[in-house]
View 1: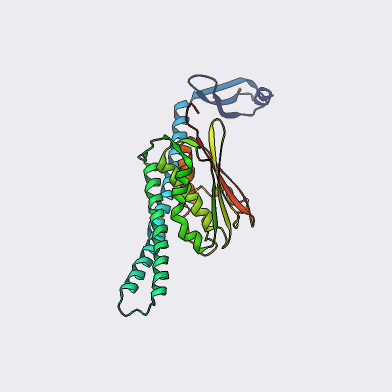
View 2: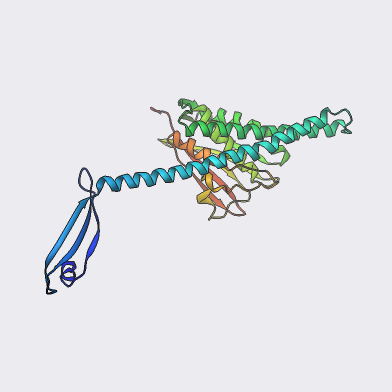
Length: 301
């Protein structure tokens, strides 16, 4: 049909890729009728050019530009966190301590204790953010230490959640752990702890006062599956695909105005993948959220 149309005076051009060849071949072609002086068409001229190198180079350049754009967006977000999410709490801690040390302040002993407790919680939040920034930047540069060992999971989780005792008491949240004592996994201790810390922190942030958070651990022949489940505010379905995309910046305030950077879940996904696991989420607005992630069991178990 194409040649019939060419013989009627039409021209055609395009490209064709031969992906089944090794190496790949990409050709540019041009079909044109041969028109005699009297206007009759006596044949077809076909021109074909090998544009493989040019096309592959263009695609590589496009991919590099896309990665550079993403890198710049990520860098901007990174500096935004440093400028705003770190500056505000550090400034608050400084001003709070200045006020306590001021001999003219009118704080009673109980008020002073409550004020110091608030400063402590602020410092914990700031320290966690700094830890996330450090680990995320190291991972981006390929410099994050990864030293997996066969470790018992239950004591790691128990020790990690102790840092949240003050926050759970303030929000009157019941945090429970359901993990068999001898559950073992092939994990990097620091990476595993960071994942748990971020998922629990996220759950506390979005759980209403008096709510419940459960950490559940199950295992099969190949993986352990850790679930961090809350009965908090949940998420809209259209939000879920973007929660681990750093450049989207969809982090929202918690149930009591807690501010987040959006970095925690991004880091969790990267670290879970580094441990050869996977991470996913089930969430329903107004019902709650459950984050799941897997880690390999120990060889020979």
